[in-house]
Amino acid sequence: MRRICFLLRVRPDRLAEYRERHRDVWPDMRRALRETGWGNYTLFLADDGLLVGYLETPDWDAAQAGMRDREVNARWQAEMAEYFTALDGRDPDEAMSPLTEVFHLD
Image (cartoon, rainbow, N blue to C red):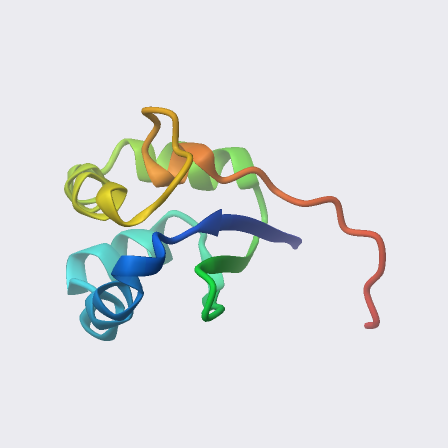
């Protein structure tokens, strides 16, 4: 199982709204994440807008590709894009770049 951690930045003026949107993630979006291998998927949000994402998956490339093929993901990403900074025209899921794991205590 591969552990993936990534960083994004939420616009400071949209933090409360971003938190609210994630209190009720669409059931079909939750299902798509599970079905495409996004296990133990967790988001952490700092008060300054730093978003830390974590997930476990057997195959990161397949997990990303699986979500790219889901219509629900296209809708979700389109709605979420306005909350982030520095996406340079990419969807939030395209801007996720895994950090390098340097230590893990099993």
